[in-house]
Length: 273
Image 1 (spheres, rainbow, N blue to C red):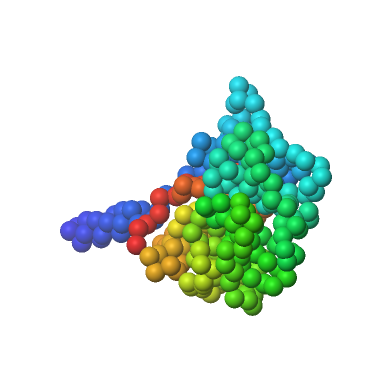
Image 2 (image 1 turned 90 degrees about the horizontal axis):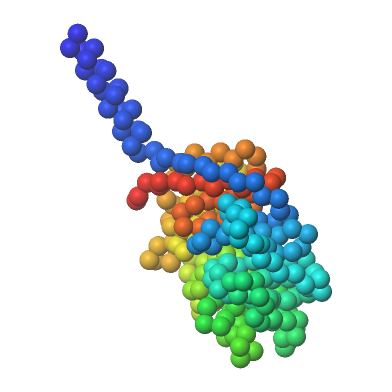
């Protein structure tokens, strides 16, 4: 009898320990009719595109708060949105090589026509770099550039980047270029600080020191360390979307997955290293 109680106690202990070591994941879902989902801000406003109109609205759809929108038919299709600063939102229209900066009410404050820069070059990606600067990826020369859009001045550019860049993730001080071989990180001197070797990256997003990627059917998290490189985080996240997401967005520890009029929000208590 003593042996039976001992075995039962051991089983209870291991089950309890496993439950404590596995992060818990909560999920919330919202209905969202959009062609593209771009992200959220600290006040849980949604940013999305429908029929090439850029919208801002509360995530809970409160009727008392009207939608705000921006649209200019001459700009072509909206390529990407940078929401790092909700008081200075960047819209990039690749077809017309134009950047539009908006305030928090989606009023245009400035327009940068990249096709007017001399010498001419074609840009594939654009993002905010702080201090009136932009991160730009020069596709013609395969270089990362820091551009001062107030003084119309190229601040610095990187050496030639050999890999084919598929996505650019930025904050004010660092730029992370996604390619078929992994993630290359650059500082604001356009110098490469590290490279994370990964293949099969489908989607990725970065939010101030945390990177999350979808690799095949799994979601993996990485921490940008004091050594200016990405290190794996312990992240048994149990994220199981109903179907493969069309886009993902990472904000304040929440992962937003969008697919087919459904926005799923995953909140995970991750294990600490």
